[in-house]
Length: 403
Image (cartoon, rainbow, N blue to C red):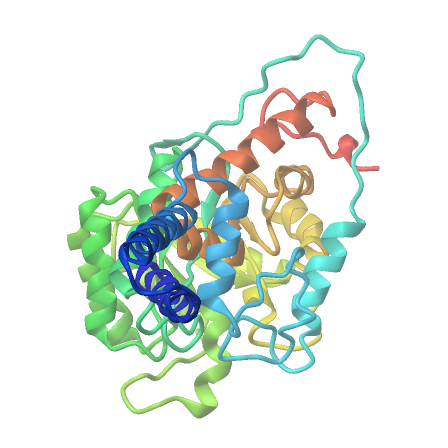
């Protein structure tokens, strides 16, 4: 940019100089005038270059959420438009990509159902400093929010040449830890095992403060990856069984499949790590998860990316919670963006929530700092909403705060 400004001013100087020479007689007075003109024009060019440099100088000061979204929009477009509200409309049917499968209705149902839930405001109390902390298998978290497992930097996010897998997983896990919580590392169906290893290296870097997800591969492949997760020191692992819909079109060496209760029990018995089953949308399967010995479930329709026309997650959560609350740790995953979203899910039975697309944007737009910024923003909103509903502890959220 600086060279461009200098060249433009140089061209302007040459034109002005020629015109001047035509109208000034050659002599001492003319020579002085020409020298003065040259001096003035060079000074103007230098001033223009200085001004351009000032305009293009990187901004200093604290990172803002708007800054993060601006960069994320530039990097993710057109895979993700970074819409003001992530409602699944603009990206419907874009799989691979960031949208919901088919009509995109499952993704939209997650968003719509969550918006319909209203909170009861109560201010006649003396509770001013609510407790937002939880303990997850011996790990204290500053709030009941974790990152969901998100991957596919090239085929889902379109970040080839913009952000590597190493940079992305470091941003997610590192940012979560900066904010006092933990993140999830993903296993992509289209990713070779070497990419999975890259993510496990990040888990090691952060002393195992992460949960690692495995696709519902063959039993042999799952157990192979469990051993790798154990070696990395992760606190738990999950299998996102809701990815099994791709079984009919599995690539060689990338088989994914539904699982029977017997197979789930085999996975539980293969390790001492807590096992989380992700993709629970019915009371029946929640009960099976308890029976086989899983330590956690994720009530999730995979962000609306695997089966069209499922209910919204928050619609099925209350019945599931009624059946298994206290017997197994319940995560909920569906369009979590605001602190009020967190409180709604907790009131309807979740023990903690996962945030996917929004933390993905934060990681792409601001790295670790962007992720921490977004989580802390959510935490502040959660504190405010707890005060305004008379909720003292995230571990004891009353259903009565739901209108």
